[in-house]
Image (cartoon, rainbow, N blue to C red; front, side, top):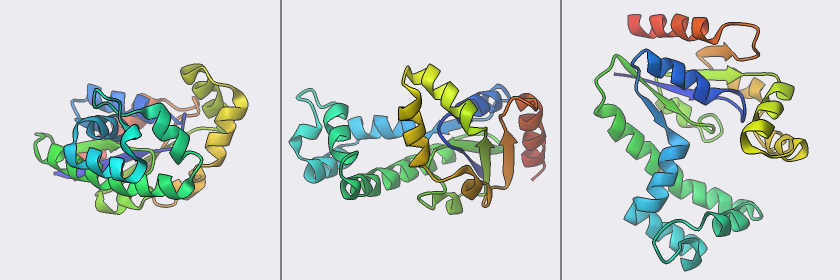
Length: 194
């Protein structure tokens, strides 16, 4: 089975693109969503997170204390890297297991950091979704009910789109100038032939 990654910067439209692929009966693994599930339910991962960040990383009910974790990792880059070193392998392992249980010509895995963490090299193909920064900021402000400066800071801390497109096998332009459905259909047909 062919494993295809979908990535792009915040607000680029990765999820929208994946939803179109899902309409074509292509299974999609959403890494961020699954990472949250694993951090709440994977006993081994939870134990490692507690060792790294302390027992306060989890509420008494066993759920991740997201506010506490965010307060630590977003003010301590080293702790963020160490947390990612725990979570990313668990997600990769889970995604691999998930992929092996799918019945499709190919599967998609959607994740924001495929290029940053180098895991795109373990995929067969990589799709990068792009959009102008102004459009991305507008989308995220509306989606997250945040403000322009907050979103701009988050974008400035991400790997620039141009770096992601350098390793892309396929690029989807989500500027609104070209039909997303047409672009997805074209990639879908190519992947089915492989």
